[in-house]
Image (cartoon, rainbow, N blue to C red):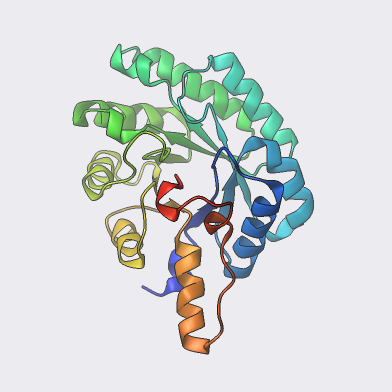
Length: 242
């Protein structure tokens, strides 16, 4: 698979608690340069990013992030605010406790409420696969499919483990083509990115693929690449969640 095909599926991500506008601006520059599907950024930067990037780049943000246990009313308000500020895509975290209590009707109601607040914008539902059993993952596939959401997303990257091949395979087996899949968290190599796409992921949430593309481009052109926004700010790369 050509690297441009992989980049076109990437939500270029920076969600560190210490993220600054300068880092987000650089992230946007990289998203524009490498034609990523979007940049995924904290809600507080959505308006600035929209004003800066204009129509050159899709802006994605997160709702109920990363724990998912805000009330449904708060998630709806966050979504409405993000859309007003110019967000094109919304990645919401489900209430994991509700899933553990098998309150599936409440989970579905919450997703549908956020779906309405999204209006015509894309909604991705983060189910945090590392915290769920396979049976719970399969149940969430059915709920997300029934909710009208555009994507089911594996992970926040903040819960100890990100996307796994087995997790994406299980989602694909259960969902079929009813809802698209976003694999996120811990995607560190082009080989892994390609593998996730091959087994069913339509989108990839990652902070690293653009850096790898820049390195590859540098090797081919003998030009030293700029550091990506995910590599700035003093934190080692391995500590940056996706």
